Length: 214
Length: 112
Image 1 (cartoon, each protein chain N blue to C red):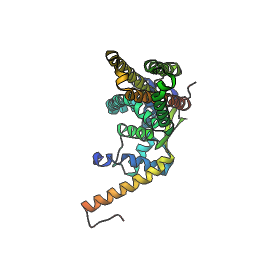
Image 2 (cartoon, rainbow over the protein chains, first blue to last red; image 1 turned 180 degrees about the horizontal axis):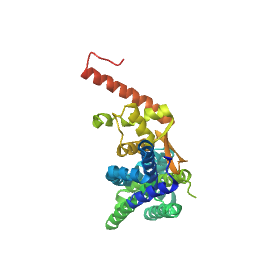
Image 3 (tube, rainbow over the protein chains, first blue to last red; image 1 turned 90 degrees about the vertical axis):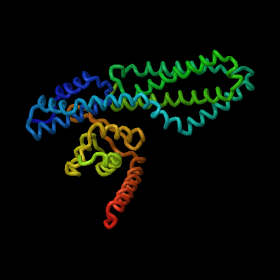
Image 4 (cartoon, rainbow over the protein chains, first blue to last red; image 1 turned 90 degrees about the horizontal axis):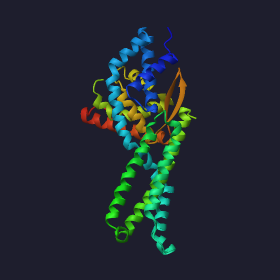
């Protein structure tokens, strides 16, 4: 008996994991390979059938698989920030932050007008949110952990902006009192969103190449 | 496994060392190699191995390669340039640790 699993048997394992609510395809792919390798080894050494080997594996490991996946899913919500941090530290991003800060600081003296903080920040935010929705379309049937982690970053930023601008509505003199703070925040926001765009397209390219998604 | 807590802190170094020797490996292969090298003493569970591999990948020490093998996709891990340098550092740290432990547990005996 050949110990190499057939395509149908691999699909069977994959479907079982989908039904166990293991949604991220990049995580599931690794699980499928691990389970299949273990089953092939059992078939080879114990001369058993696919079904019996699969059943034995799941009896022994299903609870741990589910537990590990739940933990991983929880951690994934913070992974977006971890993915962004190395990009934010790059000299280009630091340069962008400093240039933005200098320009923001001198905007009024150059133009005679106050910088449109709210319009710029909301526009950039809506832009990155739109980019996420448009460019994750080919992946919609396949959920990837890092792309979803980056969507959590947008979700958090949405609440940060809401909080700041609602606070500002209550305190109309906020900018006038603390101009350096709003300039610092806006410069950080611009660098952060730019880093997000780089990271998103890098991850997207990585998944497209590795998983051959057109 | 005799005492998993004793091995836990060294898991990343074990992975890096294996990848340094073997070039590229996939998850199941790593578990089997460790099991064989330690004669069954150390069994790495999926719950410990994959988070460790993903962490090393996120730190830029490992890079991945996906290949279709036996009707499924397989994720291979290999060291990056930074990973190769880090392996040398971590192995040196581990050797220092073993030496210190030996001096504490058995002062008369030494590995060097």
